[in-house]
Each structure stands twice: as structure tokens, then as C-alpha cells.
Length: 542
Image (cartoon, rainbow, N blue to C red):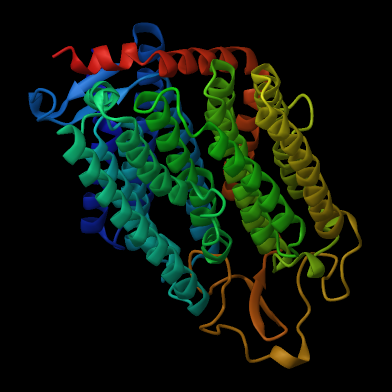
């Protein structure tokens, strides 16, 4: 079977399954879960097949409906998009299993399976569409599919905190969508096409000033979606209130879609960029400001949200260098960060379930209470911090070597900023370890991990204003109230949730074991991106 026939599956299958699940509703919850897991497993298998074919035979292209360029929409899987598709499919499957385990453990019939599962599958379809799109307008459509589903997932449960955070997220997303439409209109007015391969040819014939305006317009849009500084203020306030599976997939994937779009457009449409120094400044500020924000936090979710902003800077660093080593480092680091950041947010959900809160000042003793949870946190935390020989260290080392090879003043400044950011990341995560895991449990946390009730909040259980990190507002085995805030704890962590999290931990470790083949693939992807010819010829062959 020709691999190109698989190109629509990562988009079409989740959309079809979402419609089917809406029809099933809550009547057959087991069927709901089976459909979701089966569909994402098939998507993962198709993605792996596409990656093998793209690496062996070059970009895989399908023209929807058989229409020629530029009338039809092209779906393209080159090494970069296929790799992103494989990583995103593996991560979304693990997060789905985690969410299924959470819902089964809570045993609450009010769990909105009929909403969560279809919205989640639609989100996956939107992410897949953005990675496979060979057309600028279809890229916009993929973003909108993804964002529409994210609006539902972010406000799931309808608590006041989630509605407030969702309002900020929706306003920013709608603004970026309007800017994207404006940018698309400008590009089409200047070139007469939306096909990325054709644009790579026609943009070169435009005056330099017009090209710069179009480049700035697209960078602004994708910068908002990638949460680069100073366009990242919305992220730390939006993500922490969502349920753990939602926060994890948002942190791991949604910002990387923006990074992917920057990487694709900068290499394919605007090679030899005139914006190298501004991009380096943006990368430096994202790294330093983000990690300083993380160091100042006392809530685990917000701390990880700021590290997310910070480490986007490493990826922009590689893109700004515009060298083969820099782009290869960025590709490797994107794959690494999707997995590790998602893992840490899933662990945060387990921490809140075990300790009743994510406030570091009120956590403690988790290493004694749950040694397995401590280990599951420690490994990805050290990976994110870049401790040798983990993949985080290898990714950063590749970027730093590319910066030194560049030899420019800005490149050396970024190398110093990268080293400083890595050290501060380690400091922030050690602070989390010391406060939440290593020190003795606070007086209001029992030895078995349950929380003692306080006298001031006996009537707070089940409050509508709770921002408890679950798929549903209530229904845990044990409930308590601290400082007027309804929280719940569980004496034992559900095996399914732990298994999904540990699978992602193992995947992060696999990047270290398979670092040779993975860095080789990233290098070949970088060479393909910078040469542009294989992509353009494959798309315009018909």
C-alpha cells in the first residue's frame, strides 16, 4: 500500500470518531473509551508508517480530491511533519489513557464523557491537520479546528476559575486568528496563491520590503500561538486551571504547533532571513524572563507554565541561527520537549490527587508517602533541566554547539542565556523536589497522604468555585477543605493513570537511548528544510 493513502487518516479518523461518539453519548461509556483509544492507536501506526516512508523516499504528498496545485489542498508529510505527527500521536494516546483512568477511578456518572472525548478527538484532528498542511489557508483551518476544541476542553466543568482563564485564552486566540486571516489576505494579494510550495517560489520575486512585512505578519501570529516573549502573558493564567489531562496536552502540543509553523515558514518561505537578530533577542528574552517567572512561583502548575515559556526560547534559538546544526537542534528539542513537558503536567495531576493541592508551601513528604510518584516526577524533571546524559542535555548541547559554530555576538549571548536558563531550570525543579517531596509533610497532611479538615472550611465541599484539577467537579473518595477551598485526596494513585505517565517517562528516556538515530533524523530533516527543493518538487510534481 502506498504511504500517501494514509495521509488523510490522522485528520479524518478522529473527526469521524468524534461524530460517532457524539451519537453514542453517555449510554455506552466503555464504547466511548474503546473508540477513542482505537482511533488514536491507528493514527499512531499511520504516523509511524508515514515517517518511515518520508525518511526513505522523501516527502509524501496527496492532493485532496485529485485537484492540481493550487486549486486543491495538498497534504504533505516530510521528515519534520511526520516526526511531529508521531510524537504528538504517542503523547495524545498516553494522555487519553490517563484521562480514562482518572474518570474510571472517580466513578462519577456526571463525568462529561460525551463532551470530553469528542472534543479531544477534534483537537487531535486539528493538530494533525496543521502538521500535514501544505497550504497556508488549510493551516489556518487546522488551527481553528484545534482552538475550537480547546475552548471546550479548557472550560470543562464550568468552574468560575476555568471560565475566567478560558475567557482570556479565547480572547487571545480569536485575536490571533483575526491577525492570521489578515496575514493570509496580504500573502494572497501579493502572490496569488496559498500553496506553500508555490509561495516559496513566488515570494522570492517580491520586493524585499513586502517580503519583510509578510514575514513579520506571520511571525506575529505564530509567535502568539507559540507563546514567545512578549506574546506569552496569556499562558501562565490560562493553562493551570484546566483539568490535568487537558493542561498536559495543551502544554505539550499546542504551543509546539506554533513553533512548528514558525520553523516551516521561516525555512520554506523566508530563507536567509533578515530577522535573525530580532529572533535571537526574542529567544533570549523568552528563555530568561520565562525561567525567572518560574523561579518566583510557589504553585507547581504555574511554575511549569513559566518553564514552558522559557524553553520555547531554545527552539526559537535554533530557528534564528538558520544553520543546519541550529535547525536540527530545534527539531530534536521540539520532540523532546513535547514529551517531557506533557509528562510533568500529568505528574502534577497525580501530585494534586495525592496531596490535595499544587501549592508548594502546603505540600511535603511525598517521597515518603509515595516513592513511585517521586521517581515519576524526578526523571522528567531532570530531563527538562538538562542533566547528562538525558535527552534534554543532548538537545541543549546541540543548540549550544550550533551557537558556538555560528560565531556571532548574538549567538554567543544566546549560548550564555541558554546555560543560565538551564541552571535556573534546575534550581526551580530542585525547589519543587525539596518542598513537595523531600521535606517532612506539613502538619495538615497525614502520613497516608490525606488532608486534615480545617475548622474554617467545613461547608466548602462541593463549592462551585473549586478549581480542582479533575475531569469533574466532585466525586473523589475523600474530601476535605483547606482555607475555604474544596480539595480532595486519594490514598492510592490509580494504576491506569500511573501507567500512562510512566509510559511517557519511558518515552522520554527512549530519546536518550535512541539519541543517535533521532539526532540523525533531525539532521536529515534540517537538511531537507534548508534545501527546500525536495518539498517544492514533491508538491509541484503534478
